[in-house]
Length: 118
Image 1 (cartoon, rainbow, N blue to C red):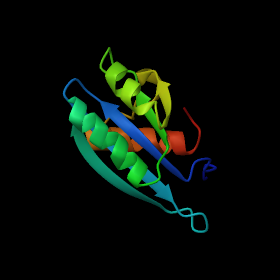
Image 2: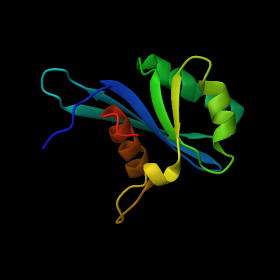
Image 3: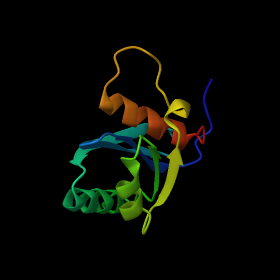
């Protein structure tokens, strides 16, 4: 069973008070194999600008992030000028229980958004 890939380059972000873990998933159109790039950023203004430039440098203009408390607001305000941001409730992108990490969560959000399941 496979899911239809809607976005061949997209990103997912796991947002916390002091940390953002971002993942970019690039899917090959022939083989449908996805390669992931991950990086962590702080929530300071200079790092949010680096985050936006990081997405743009990888030609990733579609990004999904969860609306964690009030921490998503400054991130959204900076990224929305040049990226298409999908803001979702955390309960809709919650990963399966187990060995959860921030990297796995951001990859999971990226995968859900890639297949238009958000």
